Figure 1 (cartoon, rainbow, N blue to C red):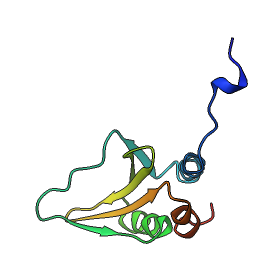
Figure 2 (cartoon, rainbow, N blue to C red; figure 1 turned 90 degrees about the horizontal axis):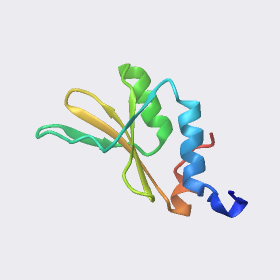
Figure 3 (spheres, helix red, strand yellow; figure 1 turned 135 degrees about the vertical axis):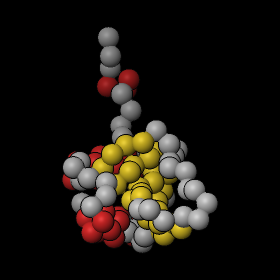
Figure 4 (tube, rainbow, N blue to C red; figure 1 turned 120 degrees about the vertical axis):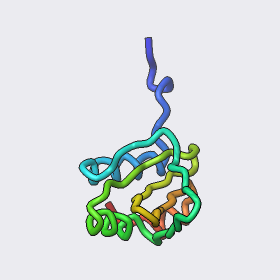
Length: 102
């Protein structure tokens, strides 16, 4: 028999990731691990997920999501010679300042 204590409550970052996945379900694909960056490919870090979504829409490319660790989640848009990346960490200041309101 399961009790209420058998299920852990989602962390703040898990809640945010669930909202992001729900809102952008048509654009996001999940990967088991972050993509490898081949030699000669530039990585551009975006300041917000909104910027990455705009890039995805402009390029017509999906957003690749990867859970790096319990504290770190990464989103990518992969173009030929450029990888666009947004990194979300389990840091309250980061969650409050970097993540847009979903």
